[in-house]
Image 1: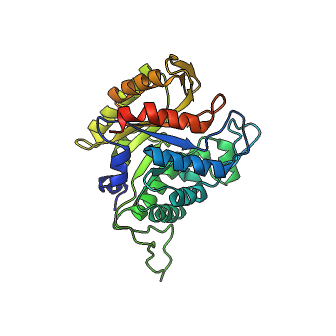
Image 2: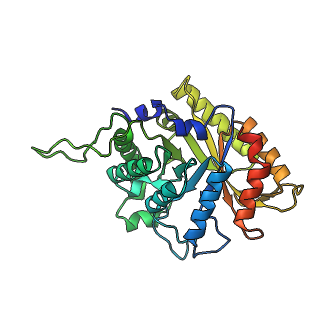
Length: 319
């Protein structure tokens, strides 16, 4: 099996989140205030259930193995697999997406086992987003060479894709004489879709060949349109005739004034819901298929923001 076979499998949950000429909206967890480090995860699960009930398409969970004083994100993230398991048990319809498992710091067979477990618990609602991490000191802490991350990412991707595809195939690191042939349980009926979050040090052509799509951070519109044009060219070269998604993680500070115009904040916007609708229409028309909102709740409770987006924004896109 080659790694790119994972992209050919039909996946209903991937089709719900990523569809050609459409835009869907998700939420990134946990939702916190600026500089907040202690998270009430009982509240996060309640917000997840609310997002599920109101029709958001996806819940995204980050993988932050270690924290340090110099790291800009002070949040005490749960292990992503533990949180994804809780989300699988507390939601019914919404997609669950890892955004992103640091593939270079985890053994791909462990990742495969965890992914199959979450997919089973969620009844096929899991999309496996993976990245390579970007902090050299963290590599050192795990005994990895940051200069080798590009090759390691490709190697781990191939092993992981083989394991979570149907039929599943375990590629051992070493095969001593007399070693048995391994397999993973429980058996899957469909392949788990794999998504590149960030570049992982790879070319866009490599991503287009191997991933169902490319997820990236928010950038100002002109720059983002340029990146999408680059992505489309890579898809045409490397996956001609296939649909490959393009997604964006965007920070949102939603005003309680519906008509407040959009203003730039780091990695996103402060805006009222009317301007947000206009921004998302422009993003959809420019080729974006999914936006996950990193909600900031400094001025308004997170529940109010989720309900506001559900009432005034989702109907424009989730028909």
